[in-house]
Length: 147
Image (cartoon, rainbow, N blue to C red; front, side):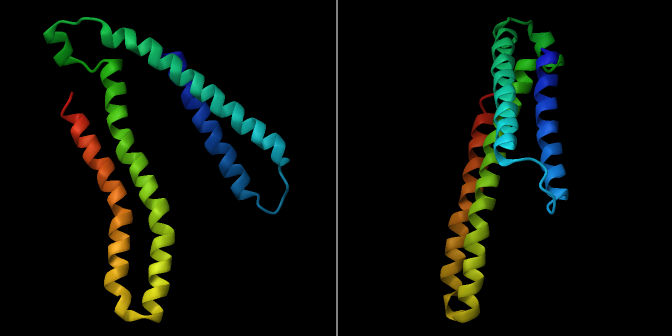
């Protein structure tokens, strides 16, 4: 189980390292796009297979019965995976809100610069885009109540 988690960690670290390497050398042509696409797809495939394996092996530990004393004293792998799963909606919703707020915020700033009376309407648009992150937070709170 730890081996599979190590493979996933190595996959993520190598993906980040490749991104940093490509970002720090923008003037040079480092790799051809088809080759980089192959590396990226291979990295995602390894991560996906390791993730499915981790879930399959972790399901056995979640299904195993433990005593009430042992369950309260330690965090099992299944409980750790559940907590990660609860945190995912908040993180992904925050990323979605950031992707939405970028263009909406820049457009709102341009509109307010030309027509200051549109300030209230642009705040509504920004609030709608920010609502995405709030929905993710609400989902995480609801899921946390299920543990």
